[in-house]
Every structure is written in C-alpha cells, then in structure tokens.
Picture 1: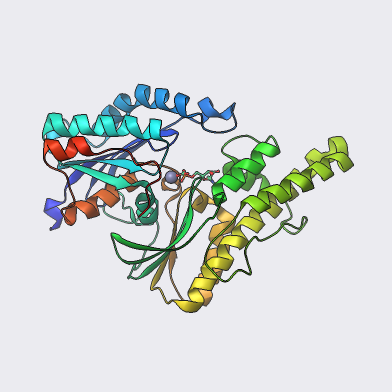
Picture 2: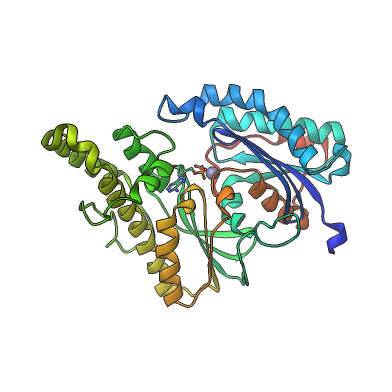
Length: 356
Ligand code: KG4
Ligand code: ZN
C-alpha cells in the first residue's frame, strides 16, 4: 500500500462517557472530534451509564457531520471503511456507536472494522498529523515494544512483537490506576475526572509528605493492585480531617502529590521488573493516565538508564478519542481484518469485558 492509496477511515468511539469521531487517512489524523460529557457526570462523581447513553445518542450525528466537514469529506462514499470500538466499555454506551457504525457501513456499502479500545490506547503514541508527521518527536519505534496501558478502567503491561499480536504480561487485580485517582479525588471532594484535578493540585505539593503504600511492589509478578492504596487513603484522610478540622484543605496539595507519587512508583516498579527480564527496542505508554506529567518524567528518566526510547501520546490523544481507534483500524485494514457482508456486519456486537 503506497502513500497515494492510504485508506480513509471514519472511526467512532463511544466506549464510556465521551462521544468521539475521527477521520484518518492511513495513520494520519484528518479530523478528531471529542464531545466531552464531563459536565453531565461531574455532579455524580463518576459516569452514569444511562445518562452517557442518552448523551451519545444526542451527539453522535453532529460529531460525525463535523468530523466529515473538518476532514473535507463531502460524501461518505469517499471513505474506504467504518471503524468502531466494540469493547471493552460500558454496554449501553458501546451500543450507540456500534449501531451508528453498522448503519453507516450498510447504507454506504463500506466495510466495518470492529476495534478493541485498549489496542487504540496502546497504539495512540503513533498517531500522525495530517502532514504525516508524528505529533511527538518520534525517531524510531522498532519492535518489540513494551507497553504500559493506563486508563480509568485498565492497567496493563503488554508485550508486542508485531502490531495486532499482544501478550499481556501483567494487569491490575482490582482497581485501575485512573480509578485510584478518581476514587481518592471523590473522597476528597475534588471533582471529576480525578486524575486531572489531582495532577494539577500536585504541582504545589510535596510528594514525600505522606507515606502511602506501593501495593504489590515486592510480589514476584507484573500485576498491580490499587484498591489497598485507596483504602489506606480513606483511613489516613479520615484521621487527618479529625486532627486538622478546617485546616485539612491546606494539606490537599501535599496529599495529592503523595498519592500521585505512590501510583506512579507502583507502575514504574512493575515496568522495571519486566525490563530486568526482557529487552524491548521501544517503550510506549498510552491511556488517560499517560497524560500525567510526573509519570512521564519518571518513566523517561528510568528508560534513559536502560537506553530504550519511550513515547507517549500527544496530550489530546491520551484520554478517550476515536483517532486511536482509526489507527488500530488502519492496521486491521492492512491485514484484511474487515467485515464486508451484511450478514457479518450485522453480527458485530458489543463485548463490554473484551480482552486481547
Ligand atoms: O483512557 P481514559 O480516557 O478512559 C478509559 O478508557 O478509562 O482514561 C480516563 C482516566 C481517568 O481515570 C482520569 O482520572 C485519568 O485517566 N487521567 C489522569 C490524568 N488525566 C486523565 N490521571 C492522572 N493524571 C492525569 N493528568
Ligand atoms: Zn479509554
């Protein structure tokens, strides 16, 4: 496939609380629209599935129209395929995107490409802008890759020998790293999404002020556990609130910085454990938590010592977006992993707990 024949793919992601549509030409992002539902879910302190579904139904059509317009696509038939996230995610949310993608595919006689949301996050550092340049200054992405995928619902370390073939080396046994940020933020009444608020407040805080556990750091595997950290925070903040009364508010930046440090260290400890056994040529980090600047700094410093290049997504592609789904779909298109008959397209269904 040479550059003049790169497929144009419209991708949809409605896996959780953001309605996203993107158009890619190969691995180049022509347009990427994300309609955030944060304002809807903020007052509940987390995503309410029935509200998310209703908002997706309302926003999906406008998002598609804007994405086409920004990509200067006048007619959907100019596209080569439709891609959609089919899992993992919230069932009522996934349904909306899948229904829409099937309709577009059948009405316009275009192949349908179902994509695993986690594969999208995993590949997201490799998105290119419409000029064909990486958003970040990527020099080489030689395989095999060692990838950390850290989102609100998942935390996993993945070994990738070739694109499309993934070996999960370790994953969280309970809460995901993003979930730990979100739950502690809720405990402290800081708002939603918690990771964004906590990382912001941490800038003014001392990461060594409060002692918090690095769960499972000594266990001889690559798995994570964040629920113990959350419980430790619950007890510690209750004690501190009792001791400090109204002055509790003053220690929030230090507390946030200490929590952020504990989460980043827990991730780094397991990543380093893998590096002692396996030698990747490139390291990648994707998912909402990869937006965290402290995480980026500590991972960069460590990987430098191992002489392994490490890449993160451009900030706007850390959180959920459809551009990353389009990129995973492009690779599937190249491998001919597409659905073309009405019978096969109609069979595509949501898999809320999809794995690789
Ligand atoms: O990947 P994502 O958008 O959604 C899922 O697929 O789950 O990740 C959302 C998660 C939330 O838990 C949010 O708190 C976290 O990413 N997050 C961050 C930051 N920005 C978003 N966590 C830490 N630091 C950040 N800067
Ligand atoms: Zn996600």
